[in-house]
Image (cartoon, rainbow, N blue to C red):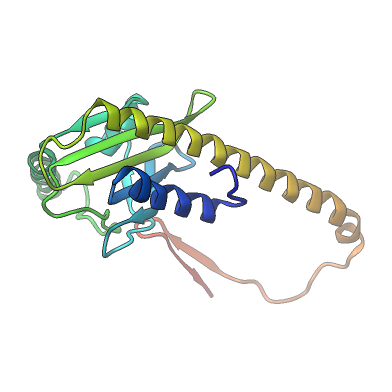
Length: 206
């Protein structure tokens, strides 16, 4: 992980290593959005569908609870919990309290029973959530939770380091281009109309 120069290689190396070194065949890495109310999938491993961009509200399900509490959550009967969560959501949709879901589906094993979600923390702040799952019930123990927690901490600190480097590069580039930009005449080109749909993250130009 320390040799990864950017975010893409970092998340790819992390999830591949969880499979190769620990035997966690199915895993997700999610990051906190700017509002802090949701975590969104940045990478997945072991699933037919990547599900990048899928979101989980903080406090919702195993992943949301790990984000809300900033503490690991381990369950051995995930199918029953998921069934209960779906029934609750349908009742809210039927009552009109929330709109029917149009969000990107979260990757997952249809018959998964065991799941661990651990917070990825850097300097005490939540960066994201790392989660793994498998089909047999009660498959994970304290050692699995401890190993994932260490990996999640390494990933969180690496992500923050990469972000800090990107911000520094951007700031340097902006300071170098500022004088030229100030002296350049304003463009008289046509305006570009942008429309963003938060429900699925789509963006339309003109």
